[in-house]
Amino acid sequence: MDAHQGSHPFIGQEDSSPCLTGQFCMILLTCMSRENASFRVTKNVILLQIEEAQIAREAEEQMRKEMERFDRERRKEEERLMREQQREDERLLCDRRRESERREKYLQKESIEAEKKRQKEELRREKEAERQKAAVEKATARRIAKESMELMEDEQLELMELAAAELKEDITAEESFETKKCKLADLGIALLADPESNIKLLKEMLQMCNDHNHAIVKLGLLSLLAVFKDIIPGYRIRLPTEKELVMKVSKDVKKMRYYESTLLSAYKVLLDFLVIVERSALTRNGTKNTTNLGLHIPVLKLMVLERVSLYQHAVVRCICTLLDAVPHFNYCESLIEVVVRNISSSDEVIRKLCCDTIKSLFTNEGKHSGEVTGAAVRLIANYVKAHNCQMHPDSIQVLISLSFDEDLHRSEAPDKDKKVKKKNYKKGNRPEESSQPQLNDRKKSRQEMMSTMREEIYFRILKHTMQSIVPRSSD
Image (cartoon, rainbow, N blue to C red; front, side, top):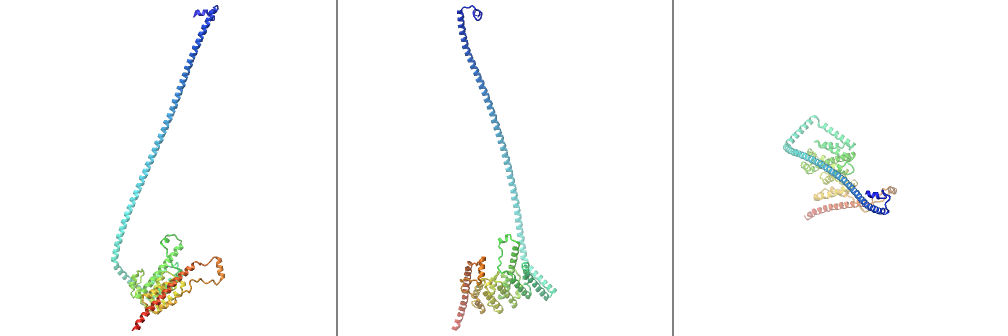
């Protein structure tokens, strides 16, 4: 190398030959080219290695990043799963708590219901025991009362007799009569002055009709007759139904209902009393009739006096006057039966009263719209049939008072005052033309029925008369 350096023109040998110099250059160039080629190869190798290392580093870095990302996702997933598990655990815990609370409430409710059922059962058993006890006590009391009834009645009669004796000793009969008469007058005046406020006084007047003195009874009946004639309304009283009684109404309606029910009950008691006495006078057996009617008014004291003619006349007069004055009112059928039953009475006064009353019914149909007339004719026909035409002539003459319209289909006569009629039409007060044919039809059917029954009565009497005359003529 040193030899080469000494001979190299560039290194130290300035006087070298050109040949050597050229060869050296060639060699040098060759070496340099070789060195450049190897250098390039080495460089490429190094570059490749560097690139591979870089790629490896990048792959490692990417792998590391992937691992980190995977770790992060895994941790997130674990955290999510942990949160979901925690929420699920909390939900299960809440469900268990709610289920336990619901179960506790259900058990508590069941225990409360069981306690209520037990209390109800105990209450029912107590009520049943009380009911059985009351039934036993009632049966025992009924048996005791039944066994001691006769003794009690005897004691009551003795007490009543003692009280009557003491009363007779304290006050004279005349003073008692005057006192009761004044009381009747005061009661009647109070009722006529304000019947709605004093309607309770009717019961006191009815109680006074149970007096032992027939004069007081007669005055009481006549006073009641005058009162009822004045206070009875111009319509039939209809008592309220159970549904109507439950409904809420005003004070005025309640007051009117009480007034009407009290008036009707008192009127019914009076009619029953009159019918009892009248029927007892016919049968001559008052106690039996009173028991069969089952009334709650004491009338046994009057049975001793019922055969007194004046007393009977007062009773029949009351019945006839009520039927003539208020034929539209309730229970008029009972009055008609009594009057028809006495139109052929052997007592001339009673017979005349009853016949005049029937004639008044026939001639004054405006009071009752003809309904009572039809009922009276029907009862007379039944009476004639039941007694086999054995009747007083006065009882048949009442039928002469019957009046019939000649043409029921004929419309009403036109109004004489045309100005009034025109004024009514202007006001809108037109007559109810549709209801008139119905009224005429009902009136026609009723009058046809009465005409048929009257003819039946006449023919029945004629037939009976002819049958009784034929045997006499043959004899």
